[in-house]
Length: 163
Image (cartoon, rainbow, N blue to C red; front, top):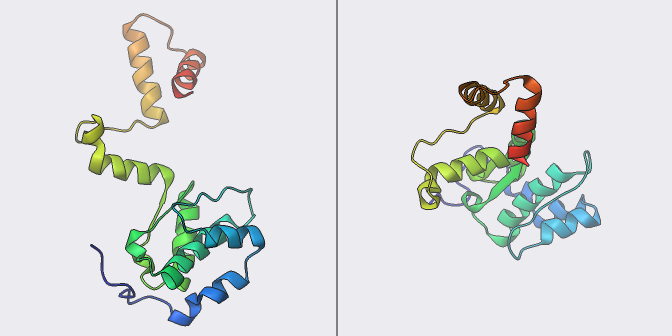
């Protein structure tokens, strides 16, 4: 599964991903996250603290030092903007960067459910409702039940269903 390591024609030179160089620019907390190898790592920190840098360096370190194939790595974040930033930074540091699965949590979960959803009882082609879809459906149901479809009660019902 996947191509051979280092087969990405747009990959950076191998010396850019030298393990010691990857670690030298990190603070202690970032270094610990990058060096963690037993299972997955979750990097949680405030805005501007270097989360993206840490995750990107961890991926590069896994490839350069541990021989992990880029196609076997999943890196997730909260926003499309952050995912794009990760991809761009990985292209500089990692041979085969295009094979790393970089995604938002929601997009990754949706992709996994599209592939394996039937195993947990989802029908093929299931639909995910965004906030507007949820509101429209709830208005329709409330109207059919003869109940108020005002914005306040709808928001309250959606909030309760979500939490």
